[in-house]
Length: 181
Image 1 (cartoon, rainbow, N blue to C red):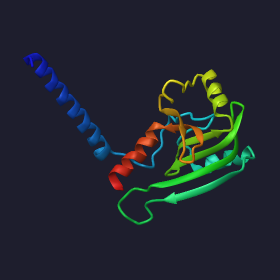
Image 2: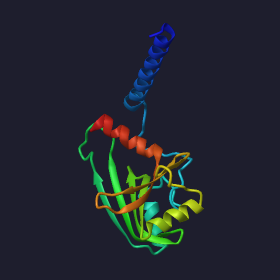
Image 3: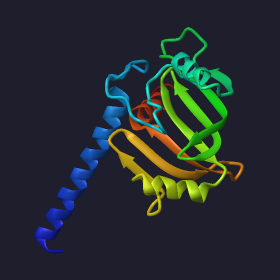
């Protein structure tokens, strides 16, 4: 191996190691509130925004006369030094977006709307409607703008859905699990 090629390979290895260490350091030592909010909320499906509390979301559903089911689970019921990890799920039976009806499942992390999954009755038609509105999932099944990630997926029962999440809250959940579970 030529000296310049060997030097370039060594420099690349050092750079990748530094990048990996920075990612590890950020996950374990950065200051994260796990309950804080932001001023620039991510726009998810329709006019639903991230970071809104469960109570506000339920008020909006009631105002639209939408039926829903509320489920909640708490990982940190003990009085430990761990910050809370509360997941609340709201299922809306008949939600409509872009003219397509289906089930909407909304997830909250520590009383902040983090993400959702929409199960339209016609997934192909709905994906085409999204594409007409500037969200093209055809290339990799994944679309991202600013703090919003949109993807197509299949759940454990084989049902297809379109998911939305605020990437900041997804990262918070990931960091919490790495630090405290």
